[in-house]
Amino acid sequence: MQAFTVVTSRIAPLDRPNVDTDAIIPKQYLKSIRRTGFGPFLFDDWRYRDPGDLEIDPATRRVNPDFVLNQPAHQGAQILIARDNFGCGSSREHAVWALDDYGFRAVIAPSFADIFFSNCFKNGVLPVVLKPEEVQAIFEGVAKNPDAAFTIDLPAQQVKLPCGNAFAFEIDPVRKRNLVEGLDEIGLTLKNADAIRAYEARRAQQAPWLFAS
Image 1 (cartoon, one colour):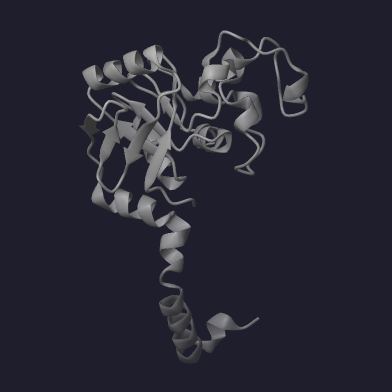
Image 2: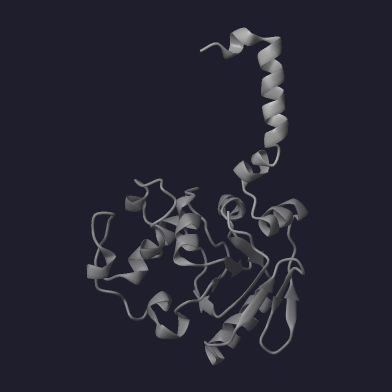
């Protein structure tokens, strides 16, 4: 998993509440479990004017020029900002895979659905909870200057605005450490690889019949 420390980027503003996981990545793309390749299908129904699926090359589809991800001012953004209850709906982890594969390192919102929020930490995407008035201030700042660079400093737990102000956010210390170190659940287990191998060797001596091929 990619570590997260400090990210400086322009912001893509998705000014909608209750963005559910079916909007983030529609159901027809759930047939794949590769974790990669979902970026072109992120927000598929809003992003394209033609229906799509895994068999259709997204480059052949008509894009919706009014959707934020298709606007030149927001190309290359690594931070997404939205309204309340982002990631609601079904528990599909594909939603976070699609955000990550597109290139988003963080999502800012006043609140997130619980399962989506947890899935973000498992995949190296930082969900930042800010007060509604702070989220509104960022939306207004992006509207005035889409090219403005914002910084999310995870060690300092701050979102730094171009004007020099900063908004603080809370995060569970264990989740923070894992993101900073780039550790998902598998990575955490592998930190104890030597102890696991030693245990298995010891058990093979104590109960060899358990290890018979």
